[in-house]
Amino acid sequence: MDKLYNSGGFFKRLLMFARLAHDRDWFRQYTQYEARALMLRIYEGQLVPGLLQTPDYARACLVAGRVADVDLLLERRMKRQVLLERANAPAVQVLLDQAVLHRMVGGPAVMKDQLARILELSERPNIIIRVVPWSEGAHPGMDGAFKVIRIKEGEVAFVEAPGGGRLIHEPAEVLEFTVRFDRIGAKALSEDSSRSLLVRVMERLDDPSDLA
Image 1: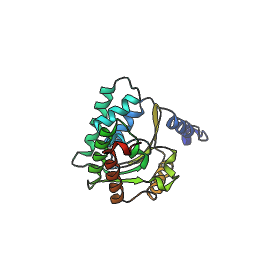
Image 2: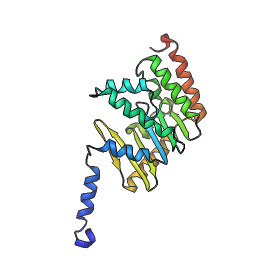
Image 3: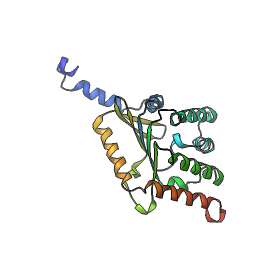
């Protein structure tokens, strides 16, 4: 359109602003990309990602978020996890800040079940889960959670925010998140060491005196 009307980039700027604007239907669009994913790269610094959550952990998160219909949103979140069970399940790479393992969402029993779920998923051949330990101090993931989704047509990124989120289509900006994911990964433990840490945290949950 810019070439046709010789607009000096007017339509390109409109497209940029449209992509940056908050879209009330952002979550539906995100889940459509997620359902078609060939690969998912997920970084989370506060909570277990929705695709990995147990029902009890997810419910505790939704209740804390004071959503209007906990049961409806819980059902939708659990249905999204079918993605991990299908025959052509995507490759999934997850990086978790160690804080995620220690945040007592739902209480010790709920957390132990949740950590056991993460441990089980980490053994699947298409899923890699690694933990960024506290000993690394500040790292590139401290700016917030994000995802990079590879579909047949290319890659999109998604940045979470309170009350919404932003899908990113611009290739250069998506690449920035891919590079950030790799930089965070450079600080993470190996898969085996991450599993060992998960087991140690689960063992602590059996001793209430060790949770202070």
